[in-house]
Image (cartoon, rainbow, N blue to C red; front, side):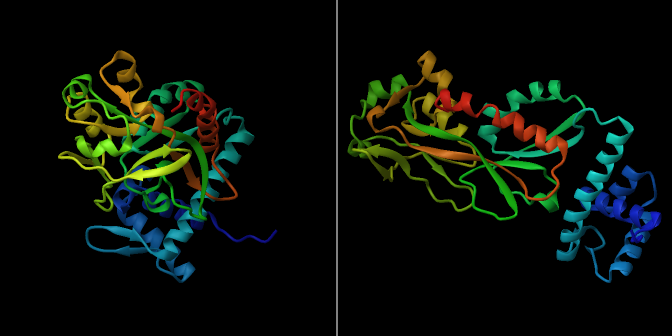
Amino acid sequence: MKRHFEDLQLGSIELFCLAAEAGSFTAAAQLAGVTPAAVSRSILRLEQRLGSRLFARTTRSIRLTDAGRTFFEQCSQALTQLVEAQQEVMGAQTSPSGRLRISLPTTYGHHRILPLLPTFRALYPEVTVDVHLGNRNIDFVEEGYDLAIRVRAQPDSSLIARLLEDASLVVVASPGYLQKAGTPQTLDELTAHECIQFELPSSGRRISWLFQENGRDREVVSDGGYSCSDDVLGGVTLAKHGAGLFQTYRFIVEQELADGRLVEVLQPYAGRSRPYTLLYPHGRYVPQRVRAFVDFLLGFRDEWAGRRG
């Protein structure tokens, strides 16, 4: 087999990947134990060899160019595979290891995933977990994430999508609100009620409430004097304190329904859900830590479905 790389060039590729992950030459230098100038020179040599700029530089920041992003995606996978191959041969890789970066929606993170992480780390103590809680879409390559969970995920050929659950929806209110305003029996009666709204942070659009009526799906545009955006838990808190009706995921309010702080209404019209999907980059090589976490979460699908999550 013909040689394609020298030790110096492989080192430059590793420093390039560190800089791309860290977002700066200085941070990459600290991780590698060299000077920022050494990182800059090494990457410049790499760019000259490739005949393409990998970073767009300013006095304060760096960002990957399109060519740099493509190069980073391939090189990071290759370096990870080399490291794990070396560890496996040396007998050190008995279980998944390394840093796992995951991005979670706020509500799903708190109620579904975060409670499971101690169990996952007990199984794989050599894996460290970095969690981002938020509802914005992330860039896997540029921001260095391994996995993300999203509701209503859009098709993307660069990502593998695995359905975790169809989370069922429920309309709830506090006993105090229902005593004061009455309990709606039909969907048409919603117009006479205070319906807490949730706005999509990306567009500001109020989402419709979803129901089944006579075997058919129906969307209802409700109205009310309260609206929340970004965090569904805001609507739940308002409902618990008597602000009105709110449609949310059943798994969020299971405890409140069980202890009577909230009451489910319009049960004959229930049955709708929204999908939560696990996403990770498509590639020939998936790190062991990512495969382990995917398999770990998929193992809970039957339990969540059984709990009508």
